[in-house]
Length: 383
Ligand code: PMP
Ligand code: GLN
Image (cartoon, rainbow, N blue to C red; front, side):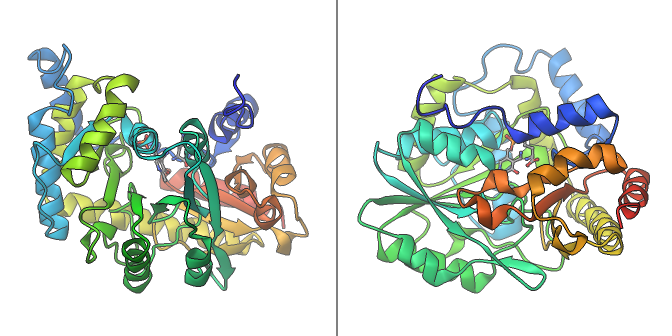
């Protein structure tokens, strides 16, 4: 393994899911739903396969039906207009979109600012692109983690190329407010930065409102927005994601994507095009369902003695384990299956400043109600 990747090892998600399988514990570690997405969308994939749509290499930027569906989704939910031919790229999940964006836009030695804790692929992709990551730490404040805008401003140097943003934010569940996003946008314009913004949890927000960063003044020409069917439609195994942005940016990302996967799997693209056109009720339904699950797990964790940061978005809850008399999230997560039959993820893996992340542990709530109820019962035995 080369020096760029040597530090990264096995992703925590694979490690923790393997631990869950080995111990038979309830897996609230890796974020994936235990119920598949809508049946009509699965049927659409079967139809595409049977009808021979997408069984051979689809067009490089993605099938036109899906690119158009992505633009219609941006118009319906945010009033944003994109050209399906020049401003949309279909990728192999958001993961490839992140990798291709960084490989396309970062020069060796460029600094990339990312909110810490950060989704683990960010650090590896910045490294693969030869960039230097500059973490800006979200600070716990009562029941939420918040971005300190002064710290963000102070992190920008003459070598900063781009900000890699994530809202709603994994793992903290923070949804950046309109004012915070406006300040990020202002900074990007003032310092002439690009922003790659990972908004995969755009529809999974509870009480808060998600505003795409690209909708702020001056951002249209400097923002690459990423989303994915894995989250909104509960098909994490399909690996269909997308990028929207100005033509020069999307063309650049596409240049990298060509040599990563060339194209993404065909039949699923047709099915996701149908998913994006589902009525508003579908999108509200998954949100409301997850909000009830958030409350179930958050209340259970509180009863079990954790300090809970109740998330405004995503399907993750970050907790502080110090009220349980614990300080080391890694050790806690390694012992948890044996102690009570539940798997969680130590947030420290998402930090450069390990000491900052040490007492925090993440639980996923994208699981059936009875599974969450069972998990809560087990966690209460810790107290
Ligand atoms: N970004 C974030 C913040 C995520 O949580 C995930 C989910 N694993 C991804 C990107 C990757 O999405 P996908 O499964 O579509 O590659
Ligand atoms: N996004 C999910 C999580 O954060 C799963 C990621 C993965 O398995 N790579 O848990």
